Image (cartoon, rainbow, N blue to C red; front, top):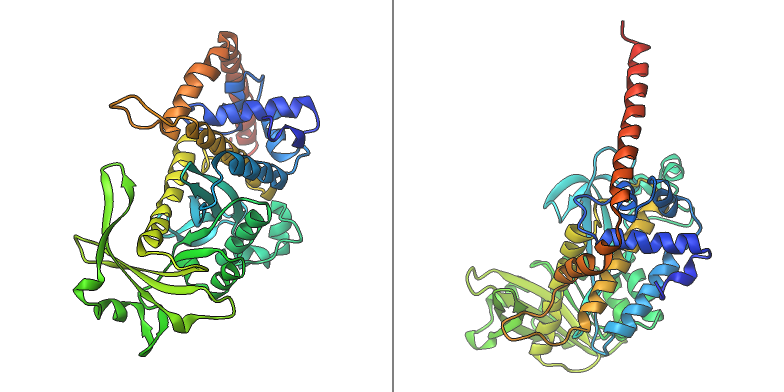
Length: 412
């Protein structure tokens, strides 16, 4: 709260933001303005709804403060920026950005909302730091729909790689220390994004499809054709990082691509990963302003999994996908406060550098449980629980009367 308090001009919204983030950290069965208000001891959900939908504060400025907080607590010269999108399944068509589209979360085409997230990973930890909501053309080209959802007039259609580029450029301009960028095929297949990263002198390890074509001394070749022709001695067994059940070992090979050089100079490679069990290949286009060993590229590729861990932590523990808001401003504010809560946990975890023998290092999820049990929960009052039971039953009683009255107008 010391970091973001200046963005809220009155003491009331500052206290409410504190209570809102405490509710996100709490082990509530579902997270929305109602449950968070009850947890905070409010007399009703109106205050939390005002905070998210109507009160005056700038979510972009708060995310900038969170980015500075992450730089101060997790910053490292070899930091890696990670880009990926995540989808939230939704019903209906009124929630901003929703349409039938492919969701990697669901693994198929679903009615969903997609957002591109930027995560930061360093030797000290990892956390989400920024976000951009993806608006399909069905939204950007429909003025009535935009107005209903409160989409600003300045927002135009942008592809996911274009959104990712904007997030990365904002982070670099804001001083977040980083040397590398990593992402999946949705971003590796975009040459404009790669060129922009080279312009910023940011090395990258971006996944590409097996059909990706690269310039070699034998002409333009597909990535899978190159992999098939590699001799046995070209492969090295290297860990992509430590997992919960051991090191993530794969067979790796990389091929220099001097013919891919452009005005940014530097070094281009095609990195290939082979699964030790199935033999399945994965491919990455890589670039660095300096020569680096294979192990370094593998380490960056392995960092990409940390953004999946962040998605899991924020969805299962912090309610990232549990919002019930349809409009542009409310969606960004909810997501911003979830990012702030996650950054707090990541920074607090980084202060725990040692553990007794037999214990793993404290995790973000375990820290969240301890923080609630030892700091938040003791401050709650029994009277708050009773007051909310009365509020819920009164609200349900009013709703019942309204439903019966509406039915009486049409039914005998």
